[in-house]
Every structure is written in structure tokens, then in C-alpha cells.
Length: 194
Length: 133
Image (cartoon, rainbow over all chains, first blue to last red):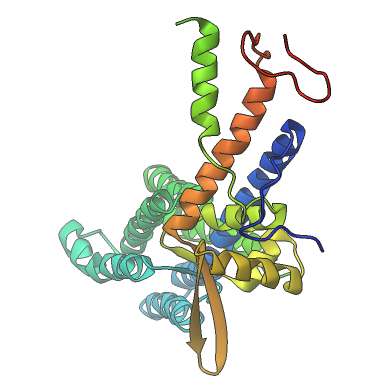
């Protein structure tokens, strides 16, 4: 393979070569950004999506307090999986800061529940789901991950609409629909491994 | 200042941005583009770069070494257990060189798109007999 080496005289490309070179680098840049985003968020979205689906179904249909405990266990499992299996292929120097942000959001959730005092445990779950969805929305905006931001926004809007229209179904609807959206985006992003 | 003078001044400014000898190789330009597309704080593994660029291991390895030697790419090793991953990111020198190179390529395109100026005066005739006068 013939390659030019540093220090050699530079052959000035023709105009058509320049057009071709610039045309080649644009898709590479897009693919690079997409891959970095997929690698970073595929597994967290998939595990959290599955945890939301499992947790909300258990919470809705298993008699309290066992359902609430099982729902929380599903979330704890998602946290554990994401902590233990972090992607090594893409690294951000800001990832500790973002991780701390998520930790703060989760850690302050009980305080916000105490402040808002939702009427029952299911409403508490909807409230927490919305709070974390806002976290997703803000994180998505922060790292320019628009599908993630869209999923966060969808969950908030859906939960709010269901809370007004069908309060008894708000948790299961937001949990399953939000979980499916997250798992679908996460599963789709896992294609980078192929 | 006439419109043509303004155009020539703009082109002269653009052409002042040099083509970088390291980046004149199309593969190296694409590698630098893939890293340049990431934020300053982001590094990518060899595997992800290879997937983004659709290159072979050998081809990517050869070119990325040249970019690293030129100071355009920084490599950092990360260990998890016994498994090593090398992560690459564009340095500030690499980013500046890439921007200048892209600017130079754009200048070439703009120069060819612009109508050739009417040359008057003191150019000596060249050997091929293509005296612009």
C-alpha cells in the first residue's frame, strides 16, 4: 500500500480529489459519533428497560408490599449490572462526573418523595420514574444523545397524561412503555457488536 | 477594492492554511476525522475505530502509529484484569492540523470554482509557451 509519509513533499490534490476527500470524511465522522453513543448507552438502556418492565409488572400485579420490594430489586439488579459491566471501548474523562450526577439523582430521590409525598406507593413509583426520566432527558441533552433524550421526554409526557386520564394505570403504562422504549433503543444499539 | 480583489484576498487567506503531509494520506485523514468527531474528553478503542472506518487491523495499526508519531493522536492503555485495551483520542495539535487541512481542501475547491483572474503584466513566458499574455 502506498502512503505518503511525514516530511515528504505534499502533492496538492485536484479540486475533484478535494471534493472526494471531504465527502469521505463526513460519513466517517457520523459513524464514529454513532458508534461511541451506541457503545456507551446500549447496555444501560437495555438493562434499565428490562428492569422497568419487570419492576412495573411485579409492582402492579404482585400484592403489596412484596410487589414493591420486587420492583425495587429489579432496579437494584439494573444498577449492579451496569456497574459491573461497564463498556471499555469508549471512555470519557467526564464519565465519573456524569456517574456522580446519576448517583446524586438516585440518592436524593427519597428526599424528593418525602417533599412531594405522593398518595400511595404506585404514585411514588410514577413520580420516581418521571424524575429519572428527566435525568435521562438532561443527560441526553448534555451528551447530545437525542434518542435518549426523546425516550426521557416520552416517559414524562406519558406518565403525566396517564396520571391525569387513568391514575390507576399510570405506573404500569409508564413502566412498560418506558421500559420497552429504553430496551428497544438499547437493543438496537447493541448491533455495534456484530 | 474590486470584487475580484476581494475574491483573491479570500482565496489567499484560505490557501495560507497548509495541507498537512501526514494527513494527505486519505486513510489517515479518515482516522483523524473519526477521532476529531468525538468531544475532547472522549477516547475510543482500536476495535471501535476499526469498525467506524471499516479498515483491517494491519492497515489501521500502521496509519495510527504514524498519526501518533506526528503527535496528532494520543494513545492510552487501560487494563481490566489481564485484558488490555488501547484507547485513542485526537490531541489539540491533531485537531488544529485537521481543521487546517480541511480548510485547505475547501480552499482548493473554492479556487477551482472561482473564475480564473485575468493576469496582466510581468509574468515571464513559461517553457511550454503558455504565456498568459
